[in-house]
Length: 247
Ligand code: PXP
Image 1 (spheres, rainbow, N blue to C red):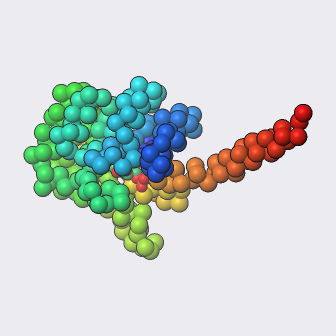
Image 2 (cartoon, rainbow, N blue to C red):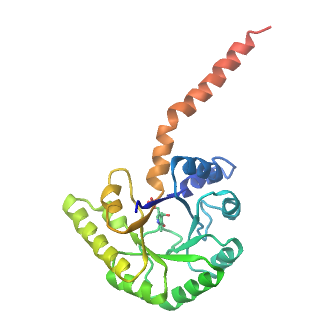
Image 3 (tube, protein in one colour):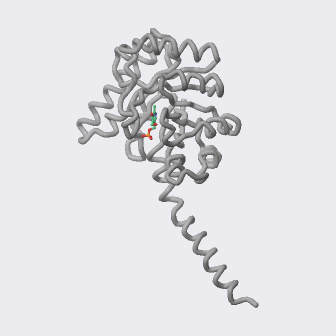
């Protein structure tokens, strides 16, 4: 099975929020991502709403043609949003206000009661649950015990590994946790820090079902679209100048 590509459009919203305006609209980005082959759309509704807004969740719930995966922390307010919008899948992540991005996996062992309650809550709504965890066999084991449908193994340490040897070490940890995930009957997802240079080894892990990728795709989109965006603006300016000389 080819792993599904979940395109995370948070950073389209990050650019929009820089001006608190209406563009670029992540909803438009989703249409284009789907045309490009996205198999699902991932958004992270953070408690501080620094990028994705409630409006984005509401509109995408209606307009996305592919399944919607909502990344979220386990809080009462977020669980209310899940009840209201019922995404196809929720990926529970840890969240600290001061972090730049999700820095580590959710500690399922430490927070087992809250995680269990959140999983049961989603299941009563018919929402499938994935848990974003470090590639650690104890976390995988506990995720299965609590009834998660899937785990998303955090690939941040793999992506940030400073040497090839360190990266191979992290890949081995991912493979081990992947084997454990599949053996315990859960779906296998991976994400965080994956890019055009490091995705291949992770996509090749047996039984990989879903990869969630954001920053590298949005970064590349800015660059590959730059020439066309500047050319369009330039032609408007040239046309306006030409029109000045018309009677
Ligand atoms: N998966 C999860 C659970 C995440 O929190 C994030 C970041 O929001 C991603 C995947 C995407 O990570 P990146 O933007 O580094 O590709």
